[in-house]
Image (cartoon, rainbow, N blue to C red; front, top):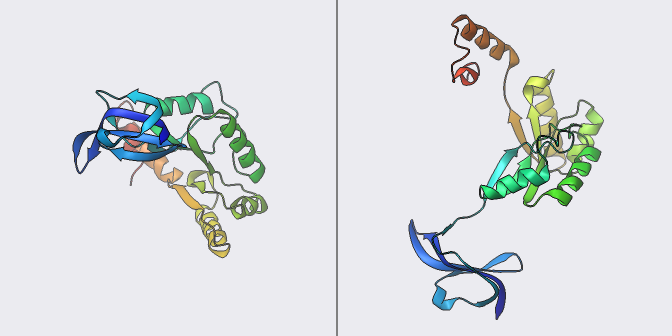
Length: 210
């Protein structure tokens, strides 16, 4: 049998130690991992001498700024940077222009990613203040929704509503929560400014208490 790709002379982490071996790939999936004496033939052979093979990482919090702020980054440049760092799957945040908080915007952004991304990707949806649009978005069974609590008038009520829709419709949607209280942050910020600690590297962290 001749498979698509063979990476030989590579180091593999097995049972907490590095061993020499090879990896073969067929139809985009790993077909064989093991000793090179048993390796199948391949159309493409890559010599991995001096390298260690690791699984691709997953980054669940990226800001590709696409659409709306592509002068900063887009799905192409962001996913290229991800691959360079060993990240093969990303989940993009919803704070683009326009905000990804309706079903139509979600679909539009997904189409952009499908055309431009070079890694696997998913999208966190945002929360719409329009209850009907939020319901439509959730009932499409999106993978995940990001709840940015500081921007909501009544974040707990919004969370209860989201969870009730998920339970009632037997959805698989995961809820990602940015849990901060703007009033507490403002209070802690004032304290730090009185202590003239604003230039301290820990300033951002210290004004966000657990």
